[in-house]
Length: 113
Length: 114
Figure 1: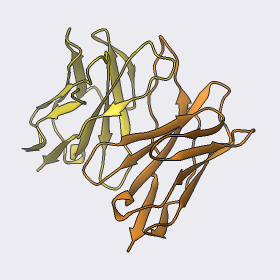
Figure 2 (figure 1 turned 90 degrees about the vertical axis):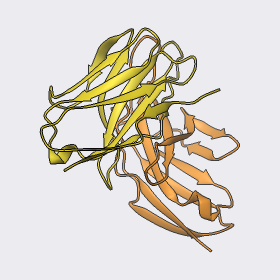
Figure 3 (figure 1 turned 135 degrees about the horizontal axis):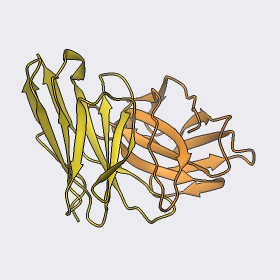
Figure 4 (figure 1 turned 120 degrees about the horizontal axis):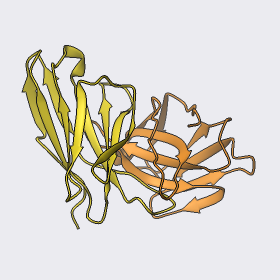
């Protein structure tokens, strides 16, 4: 599975938009990009997943350029409750096969009042 | 609709003991994966169960074993506990058959080995 690189930490303030960029230079053709959020002592929570271009849900947006070597998670108007660790993962998801998630260290986002 | 549940929430053991952790997958899911998360690190894949068989394993010793039951629930067993086994153990479930096999995590079991 492709290795990912993301900033170790980020700081923001309530009401701001936060963009976390993840680098995955060796992404394969069949790889999807998935982001998880994790609060202390809790399991990771699925945020969003995409393959190319832009994906949006009620929580976040995911921007993937044409070469797919990076992706950006966008959190609109963050609040204090968005303080968490955010993980970017790439991997194959296919029917009849398997997908083991390989987590990096993640990005620790701190939202300040 | 219940999500992934795990039990117990916390556990304290001593070195050399054995421990069993339990996981019930999200309704409709048939695949269970286990992860170990040490403090300050990302989760590390232990193994995955599907159709009551281990179909993939991470870089963990044989002291770590598991089982999946016909109702898709799963157990993680760790023998001869070491201090380094202290961690948050996470269970994730998914449905084998979807092209995008998203994994959903439980709250975890915090294991402390003294």
